[in-house]
Length: 257
Image (tube, rainbow, N blue to C red; front, side, top):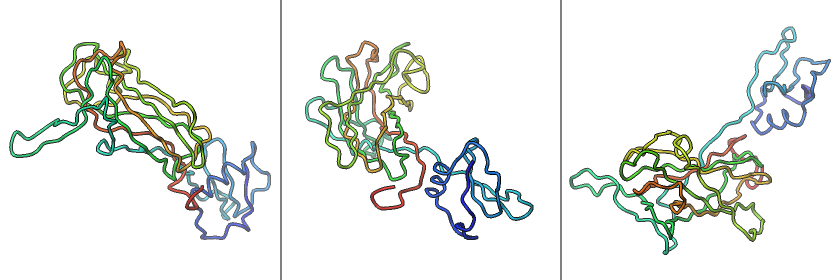
């Protein structure tokens, strides 16, 4: 534990999540101070809380948790671009069997060569917990029922750049695991069900050294040439998004934490 002298903490002052987090992380010791006095702030490494010592009998009169959580960095499919070579079809998925135009989405076919792909870019928000990994998954649905043990495999190629970085010579490619039902989708179905909303984890992007406003420049594709992608129908993409950890609602300054 550690503390900050209460003389610096005016009664009634508002402490931001960022300030609270810095107190917790930068002023922490393994054992409590021996001279806790009313008005002092101190943190506890065991439960990740920040405390304020009250004046009534030296009791802790309130506590609150420093902000931590997860959110989605969403990539709406209508914003994705084709490269003009190995493009999925943008076709009708559902309609009302009447006068309506219906709902359209990207259809990724079971191609042995020329795997179908889309391109996009995304920026890390100011609430991103800098230096932490993020996780990519896709939301999708099968065009027709699949046979037992027939799954879809997704791939993702990217570079991740901080502001001021120079792009590396090589990109990074990661793949989903389509080896069995437990990994092919989070729902775990042994056979794909037509028009059912599935989610598939593609993988983790290493975030060491990455900061807010960093950019992901990306290619998303169906790895249909892989032996474990043996579903013969189309995989209809609904959305791709990244789960990222947060330790603030935003940044203290416009360009930096």
